[in-house]
Length: 298
Image 1 (spheres, helix red, strand yellow):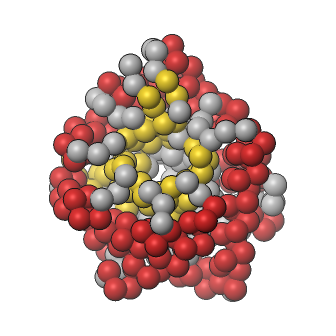
Image 2 (image 1 turned 45 degrees about the horizontal axis):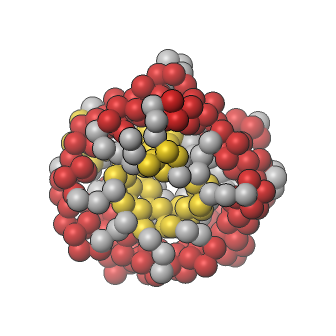
């Protein structure tokens, strides 16, 4: 039996659903201004469900996303609000870790907007320096190419905390990044930057078994947290998309998601959880299944 780190589930989709607001290209960032208590409530729900990690709602807080909406002066304040919500939830729960989330620059799933290292690394380092004093780990999420992953991971080191590097793979072929590059090519970044763990996220659960077989060869802790979208629509890959362009699947019940996640654990994954459209009910069911199988959740 293994010791498993149980991540939380998706934050952005939960915020959109609970706020009732129309989604905008700012995703869940705007919600923190209009509905300041919602982020804390969702963290509370994930801890109550059995998660041992709260992921900060900082995924999309980048200068390039805020500037077009006149919100860039709030860059630091938005990070601090998001971190405080996670800290307060963890303190109220009495245990748990906090992962400071850093998503891709410019847009999600798009390798074509990857920025060169001399541009990306300082941008990520700025965020990592804000998050570092308050979190236990920096989580670089949903990186679509090797270069995108490298820029985030190198910048994340500025936090002085362990770094978990997470990439997103092709929904039809989990052995390839969304850029089309072999997932195995990420090994160079892992060897050079030395993150504490490598993960795969925000791809359909069906793609994760093939991805786990690849990252299992990297020699460091690994895991997965899948999404609940049917697919990534081409409309979402255009400039300033909203989640209206993405369709959630109706068949991914908590029980079905648990079957997927337990199969990743059987492959050796020790960090599992959920991404977009995977909510507290899924995490609760997964926590129950892990304990029933004799695993320790930590």
